[in-house]
Length: 216
Image (cartoon, rainbow, N blue to C red; front, side, top):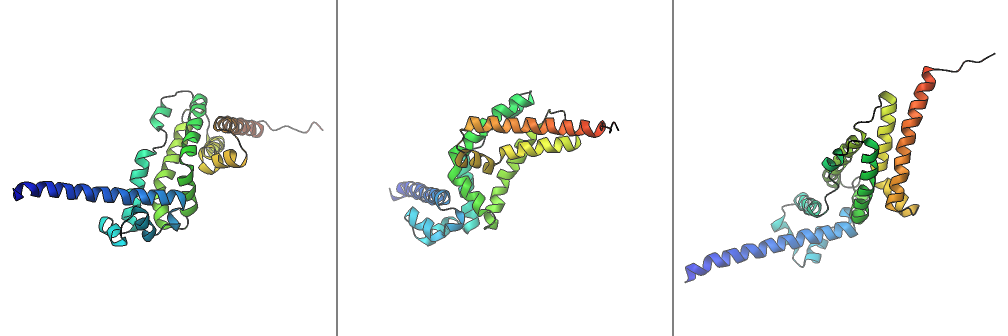
């Protein structure tokens, strides 16, 4: 009978260990979203999770392992917009006008965490390393929104810069928080910026190709 109980106890122990690991991970995520990674110590995570500091290190060999677990767990519940869905929209203008409100809605839902990560990435190399994936996502998003636009050279770089600016979290935060615009209003304004960048670049190019001559 004792042999029959042994697998049960082992399974139960494994379940409790997994629950503890999850509690530690979620406690770290909560602190990263409120205080920020740079202001979150292992001791603070342990206290929030209701475990000893040594228990945290039993589950995570170092801070990097804990941060990696936090990043994966948080992203699983807070994935950014699907770039493949954006790419299905053939018209570049329609693609941009559909994508920006979706991106800004994502920023609104995840603002506390993203604000802290932006603030702390230059303070902690570990945060910068893990946050590089999100910056890569934004670069891919910019390229997706640029695709299909008939522009070359300096004109294309200018439009690319405008799209990149429109996608940036600090841009949304300034328009939303400091200027009080709604997400759709902010998106419409940034769409106009991209259009102006495209038109201005075309006009500048045309002006250089056909310079006006002094009638005198």
